[in-house]
Length: 423
Ligand SMILES: *Cc1c(COP(=O)(O)O)cnc(C)c1O
Image (cartoon, rainbow, N blue to C red; front, side, top):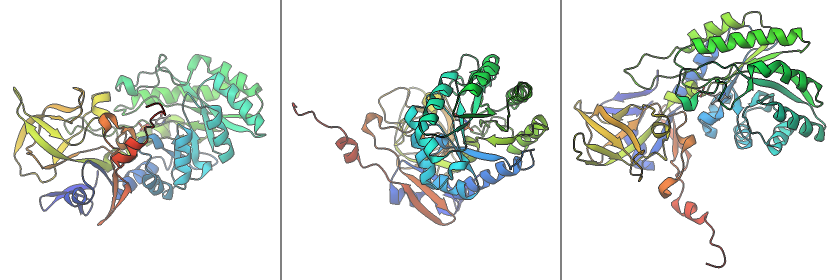
C-alpha cells in the first residue's frame, strides 16, 4: 500500500503531481510520501503491539542506513520509533533528527573506539556487540569514561536467509555476529569484563526476506540461548530480533509476508521469554514510500529492444547493479501503450542498467519516469561516480512538498579536491 497513484492521467505523490516537482527541482530526484512512511510505521507498530515484552513495550528501532534523511527520521521519531545505527555518523544524524538516545541501538562489526566513546557519552540504549574483541575494546573505553555499556551479543545463528547473497548476514561464513556455538563462551568472557552490563541477545539474518521460516528458525535459536544463558547465571533482559522483512518490488512475484503475519510468528516464538523485545525494520518502513523520479534523455535503437536512456544512473540508485534488484518503472503520464526496452543510465559502465528486456509503459524522449519502491537503500547509497552530483530529495505531505535535501552543487564536488602546492 502506498500513496503514489495516477490522478487525471498523471502520477501523484499523495496530492502533488510529480511533474510539478520535476519542474521545480529538476531530475533525477527522490520523492518520499509522508503518509506512506507513517502508514508503514503504524502497521509495523500494530503488528508487534501485543507481543510479550517486559517491563516496557517493544522498541522499534528504525534501521537508519535504509533512509537516513533527517526529515524521514523526524517523522518516525514522532511516532515513537527509535534508531538502529551502524556508524557514528548515523548516531549523530539520529540525534540531530530528535531521536532520544535511550531509543538508539548501535550495530555493526567495526565500531571504533571513537564511535564507542560518542555512543557512551550520548547514553544510547544498547550496543549490539559482534565479537569478543569488540567487547574487550568497549570494556576499555567504558572504563576510561567511568561508565557502563549496556550490551547484547549479536549471534550468528547459521541459518540460510534465502535472499540475495549480498544481503544475507546470518550464515556462518558471513562476517556478522558471534558464531552460535561460541556464544556461551563469549558471554562468560564478557561477564568478567569491567564496564559492561551484559544483558541481551540480538540477531539479524538478512534483508528482503520473503519467507518467515529462516527468521523463525533464528528466533527459536535465540530463545534456546536465552534459556542456556540464564541457566549459566546471566541476567538476560532484552532480545533484539533485527529487521529484514521484505517488500514487494516486482508485481509479478508473490507478496512477501505482511507485518501482521510476522508479528504473529514473533508472538508465538517469543512467548515466555520474559524480555523486552527490540526490532530493527528498515526497508519495510520506507521501501515503497519513495520513488526516484527521472527523465528520459533519449531512446536509442538497439539490435533487438531499444535502450531507454534516463537521467538517473547507477550512482543514484545502486540496487539493480549491486543486487540485480527489480524496480518497477512507470511513465508519469502513461497513455496505455506498452513497449519492451532496456532501461539504462548515462554512466560509462555496462552495469549501469536498471532493467533488460523490460515490458513497461511506452516512453519517449523528455517523458518523466519513476523507479518505484526506491525509498530504502536508494538515496542513502548514492555516490558521485562520473562526477554526478548527489541526488536531491523531496518530501510530500498531502498537497505540500519540501526539498529535504538540496541537489549537491557540482561546484562543491569539484571544490572538495585540493591541488597540492607543486601543481
Ligand atoms: C540493515 C540492517 C537492518 C535493517 O534491514 P531491513 O532489511 O532494511 O529491515 C536491521 N538490523 C541490522 C543490524 C542491519 O544491518
